[in-house]
Length: 300
Image 1: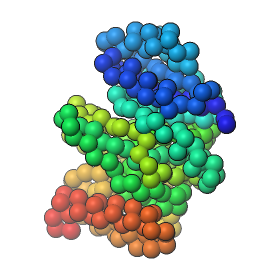
Image 2: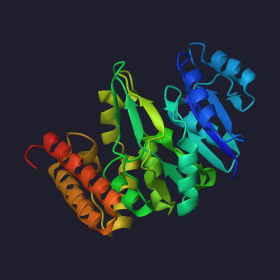
Image 3: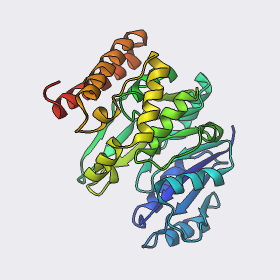
Image 4: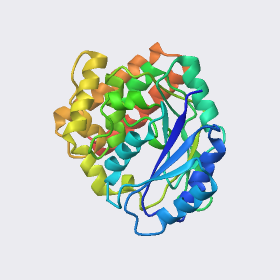
């Protein structure tokens, strides 16, 4: 099997990073590596990683001179330093489930995929709150349709070919850097899939960036990602839908709301072309997004 590096960006996660690394180490193939970048933490994150690295030679701490890299900078620094043919992403406050890489790498081999994702098991907020994402797989074609509607896969569940991510240009400095990259990968012809088995326990909490209103507003106003979304619409349907701002937030003009409604309908109609699991996933995604759109824009 080709060598694999699990990339973990870390900032102010001294209380969770050791558990995250331990979970990856349990699931990792014996020749795998774990590479952590400390993004100018103000706590003992770096010291915790160094202590773990002394016990496990597979673990390394990427030296960036104490600079604050930010989300995109940290992701690209890890990608540049990984060097192995295969890479995976992991968040420093999540947990990799024991079967993660066995399941994902098996799917990659069986279906000749470049990148594989998995559903997540959401944990929190609250000590006993846990719920899985829908346990539905996706193939390269069906996933492209889902990506037209939302960020259909979880970044901390990514495993695949480093070259595919580099060929797409790596991460860009945009609010939804993950969705932006997945759409550019789809445009690049990258073969992506999703297992039906959860691979990551993903911790939800009130301080998460994605739950902040300012982040949601920034995503909806993001012109570069909106352009990529239009490009993927054109590649998939042969026409441009100006739907991105309506799909991602309130305040879109009526013509863009109408385009979003049409895109949802067109994607849902294409679901009939797929096997049952993919068909259910596309239709459920479309249905949920249609309800959300009508909640934001009651006159639709």
